[in-house]
Length: 492
Image (cartoon, rainbow, N blue to C red; front, side, top):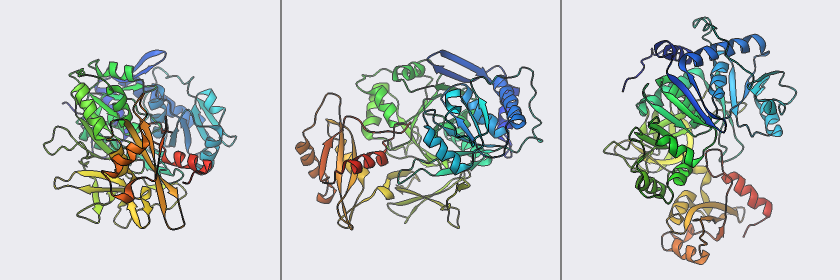
């Protein structure tokens, strides 16, 4: 695979300009949406970014952070890169972010500028004085790229953490960290100019941004879908234009559910999953449907992607997230068994905005994830410390219980949550999402759990749920579920 080679001190802007110089007419970004397909080659992308970053430096007042509406469409990568090239810090947000949420974000990060469509700009609070309508931004033909050495003070990104154990934190990652994660992912996936990445992950999510950066660094095509539509995703996977598909378990499940073997394009060489644990059921289902083995990626908003598994390796384990990327230090504490995962990486955040940053003197970040490392150096995640439930002094890992319940043939998914019981202990409940058209018998589920789990791990309460709140990448929102039950006052 032909790859671009960059100096160790290259910037994101230099990387883009190199692709524009070497392969100006090759497609950089293609977007798919209700209005059809749109494409942009590397020359246009470089020129448009240069023009918009210049406009932004000239016309946007202030030096604070920039709120960027980040729909999954052609212009979003341009806007994000332009803000970085202008030396500013961007916070990409969902187009569905409410007025109240935007006000809170502005107060937390001190944003004084916003870029987005009119409906987004109208929801911004008055403190945001500089506003650019992204729907009217046009590339100025004939514009020259800024002098690299004069304008090389690149900005950074602010990202909202998932907030699994509480309100989302705001993570700051600078330009060097963004370049590092792009390089790491590009190398882990062996990306080169001949590749095409199908991006069905939102561009305001760390996972989606990592793949955008990897595409930029490797000079490969990026196909962006405005929403995940299963039939449209499969059509792209069959087109012969896509070689790599980064997905989440829910997407893999939906496109392979109930399908007999229907091989995808021979061009597709890599499918990876991230965002939440990949159930073995989904792995086997996707493989049986399409003949493709799915690897896993491990990362977080705080440090981007830091590990990746490769199905082509002899040591491949579908339950593992693989080995650390180049330059990444990944350890489990205490060593030798299950423990907390600690990470140090060149893609590490610089800080939590307005909060202490939990980095040790050795530069290691305590992730809160539980895992173990095998003899081949591969990491398998086993749970979250903050999710552990104390049942009378005995700890219950909800992920373990969920995996067992999901083995029942009538259960598609299970979520285990704590039930406040006393000031010293909790109980736990299991929310069951059944297979379509089925209604599992709850007593049968209880017997099923008792046969496979120690008594203290068997949920006290079982209930059926038709749907559960999820994030933009399909991850179940435990916090929203817990708040729902707290409001209902269900504690027994």
